[in-house]
Length: 116
Image 1: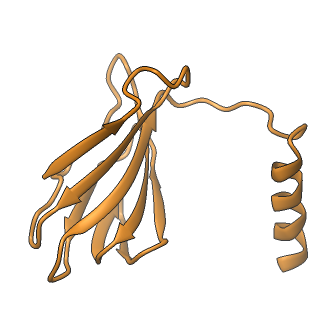
Image 2 (image 1 turned 180 degrees about the horizontal axis):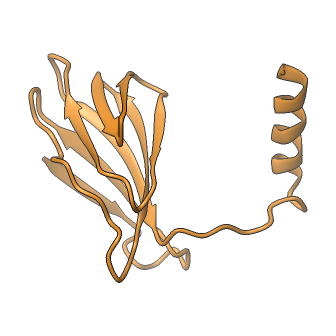
């Protein structure tokens, strides 16, 4: 697996941003991040095909699909395609903040409500 760390420690955000390239048949391996410094991980497939297990759920993923792995849940990622799997990962400590003052967030929420 090749990992590119984007702006390592320089974003002034409490997250790491990486691109992973996993060869055919490769995998991340089952793990969780719930110790003294818990981490939540976001995965988005940029290219290729993958299977990701998060707890009891199994997801078949392709380009544009994303999955969130909470800190206290076992998860793993496998390249199930014939070519390389390219994945954007963003990980950091669990938490939240109020995004209601941001126009793009309000617009996304409005669109979710009308889609229901």
